[in-house]
Amino acid sequence: MTGLILKDFLILRKTLRSYLMILAIYAAVAFSGFWQASFVSGFMMVMVSMLPMNVFAYDKQCNWDTYGLSLPIGRTRTVASRYLVVLILVAMAGALTIAMGVAMNLAGRMEESLGEDLLTSAVFVVFATVINAMMLPLLYKFGSERARMMLFGVMGIIALLVVIFLIPLGGLDWLQSLGTPTMEQVAAVPAVAVVSGLVLLALSFLLSRHFYGAKDV
Figure (cartoon, rainbow, N blue to C red):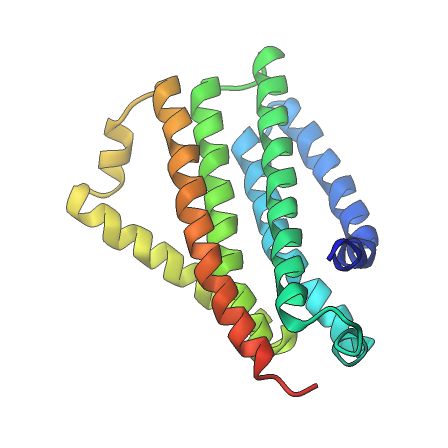
């Protein structure tokens, strides 16, 4: 399985370098005070949501499934390795987001408090996890080309669910009424998010494994 994970990262190495260069430019602009740190966090989460599609596209170009399934790996481990790659990418993006927020806070270049920035970072990590949990089964079922067009629909569904959740509470006014989050609240959000995200990814994995197991290659 380690080899499969390394294979995916080798496929993504050029794309990751390009994204890191763009990220460095965005971070420099954020440090100048033109953008908030949350803008860069949002960019990283969108990046993490797009990267798995690139891996699927490259696998299709080189007919990897035909070759990979001839090896003593099995479909379950093949799917599991892809999910581990996504988790690693999300964790890396989250760590970079937190590091940049702390650096901007120490440099006095951040308008919001450190707690607000950490909470925003946690929300973006959850958002990226949910998108990938919804997209990976679609990628296994329909392929990268068709699933790429479904990405916007998935994001729209997530936004609709958020709106449905907020309406009974008073919408965005309810969020604003919460004020500055405490460090206890900031710590609670990632804890709840990790548990919820792992449950969602487990269900997503089972669905992807079903689709990949029924796929003829």
